[in-house]
Amino acid sequence: MQVNGTNEDKEGRSTVQVNEEVKGQEEVYGYVCLINRVEGNRREVLVDQWPDFRVVLVKPGQQEVLHKKADTLKYVSIFTKDESRLRNILTGTDVHDWKQNFTLSVELQHEPIIKAVAANKGVPNTKTYFCHLMRLQDPSKLTAERLSFQASSVKESHAALINSKWKVGMSELTEPLIRGMIRNFPSCCVLDSEGRPVSCLLTYPSCTMGVMYTLPEYRQKGYAKALSTILAKKLHSEGYPVYCFFEEGNQASYRLLTS
Image 1 (cartoon, one colour):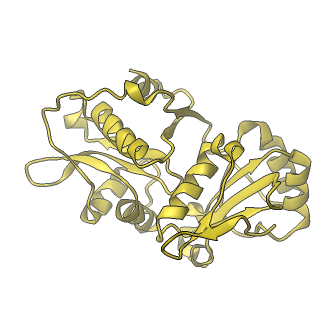
Image 2: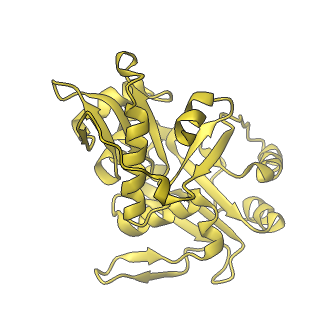
Image 3: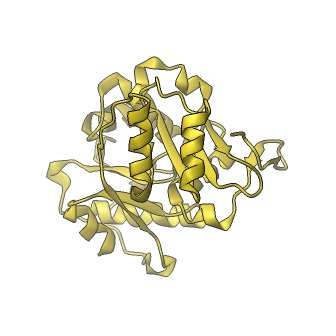
């Protein structure tokens, strides 16, 4: 596989071109959108051929691969229109280092191939999350509500607190990821009288809205719903895909996102 389909924008930065089929796979498309706009988003986008590609693989850049302490943060995302070609690439090339720990995101229909390849290579694998994807279908439904509070962008100084409340936070291992998300991507939060975030929402490097958290004593005030609307509007106005994931069985998140 190779990095292909790139050109340069007016400022001389390398950009990645995508087609409508990739836009239908939000996670890969989201990575590409942010790679094209944010210099700090160090990801490699690999395709099997150009322009008629059948497989796209987004993986950490070399600097992230060399950072041994954050193995679990090495997210790999795959888009494919041809399962046999995907299998051949994963088994017959060195495009992916199976000796590294990593978190792989793939559509459920391709899970059997990933498991088969991993088993063939003697690599243990665990399904950590089964998530549903929810995308913004109609931007006009992002109604403007009169808020009783002031929403702000999250600051880097909030990273440690947010990381400590994050479901998959692992102290010093995941704080750099949170810090990078705050520094490079859109975010919003509600602050208390001392300037501490009591409710927040960030954007992942894949352009997914996530890391939503509200302190228990501030729940049932409409903060999460309001922040979701604010961030969705911001992402949409800047031309990004607007979507998020919620775990199977998480009815609270589903109700929040559909209300």
